[in-house]
Length: 574
Ligand code: DGT
Ligand code: CA
Ligand code: CA
Ligand code: ZN
Image (cartoon, rainbow, N blue to C red; front, top):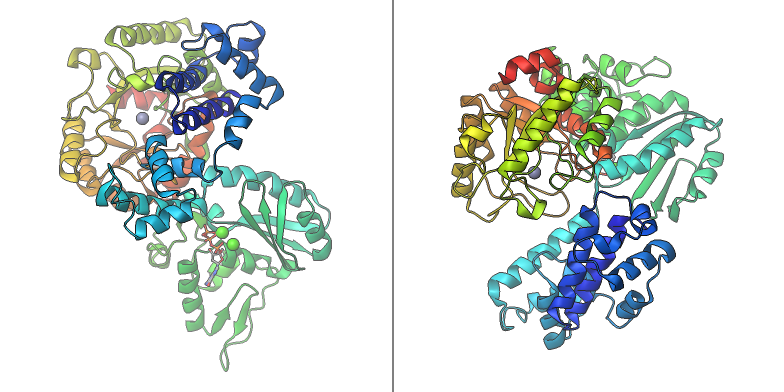
């Protein structure tokens, strides 16, 4: 078990204890221990081997022992017993947004509600609203949250889906009975959340390939098995559809199963006007019209060409104007992953990151980037261990020294992810902000302000002369939490007017500013920066998610700040 798995169990123990009405201090001790463990920059293995667990804040002998047991034996009898003595559905109830252990306890004790289904019924019957301390508004919020959860449970983050799909694709491609294999569907289109994974292969031995596919260790359940289509459920609950076609149909099938459905409908209608009916199998002569399409083994490019269009990249096949643009030769030349030369939204152990500044830089160098901006949290984000003015000054000094030492090939920029306070003021004084190379301004508190107040607040922040760019514009967490209410169009206009940047936050949970806004915003003159919001060395890889969003938003290389060379960036930030 790793740190985050153990922390999750400690958190769950705290919830269980709270449900049982345990002493609040005892409950808090488990929560603190979970946080302490996550915040420690040492490896779990070393913490245990060197007996350093008890030196972490809030971890005494008893908790250190429990953590060690979890890490080594994977099973903690105390926790197992606790779980057994609690009705199964109840922990799920705690996870409903807006319901904590205290509320769940009341619902359970007074109404005997143990499952989400029962909770839903109780809400609909108005029984929750009548409970002391709840009311109609809480009841409606609970019902909404259950509804969202039901939708959320069926979809997956793009990054997670990609992690699952890539190795399966790799093995498919290496099979001798497989000629070609590709990912299709929303995953290929780079959508921020994915319903199911669609894989496509061509083979003359489809039964053999399907036999292999449905008997792999990653398969938890075979939902359907046939020679042309099989569906399986992965252990994590994702569904994967594999379709196998003849080589001659591959291009047509790839085009069809990439979608989107809306895009497909548009090109099928276009095809009909030319006298062909288009399907996943090919072009066929519509009755009494032109003869069948003669080209063998047509590629997607051939198909679009036959329709009088240039190749349209999968990410923009959303019927968001791509057909019209293609018709007049105005398709964008989309930005590519290889265009990125560094990122600016990066955290270190100085605030809530898991890796030190040096580790983050070394990892960025491995990405072959030219520069990296460091932007730890500011002082008001105390839950994220935000930097005080003194600590920020020390970090600026440290970065200067590292740049001067020439120890790394990569250039470091000293920045901050500075909180936008509830009144729109920034969290550091002006003279300190001036000493930074750049400033990302972000909202992390008072998330429930009404739309007008929140919009005004953010605009005030971006009007600050030291603000360089706006971080995660709505604060949404995909599949977890809606963003705060904000007028995105007004903020875009204010950023353009003030020559400020809006970031694409490539963290798989964020993927915003949403791609649906970018095309129009860029046309009006908005500049983008693709960031990862990295909290650990591995998160540099999230720039790929950011590039997905940019491509879906029709952005080209020159629309994105961090495709520029170091020299150009230095010039820009001046
Ligand atoms: P998802 O799975 O909800 O994230 O979204 P997709 O786009 O992957 O949708 P999915 O898996 O239902 O189907 C894959 C593709 O197959 C879809 O993008 C387009 C195509 N397709 C599916 N159903 C239809 C349909 O009824 N009409 C047309 N024209 N295409 C369809
Ligand atoms: Ca799909
Ligand atoms: Ca599908
Ligand atoms: Zn942030």
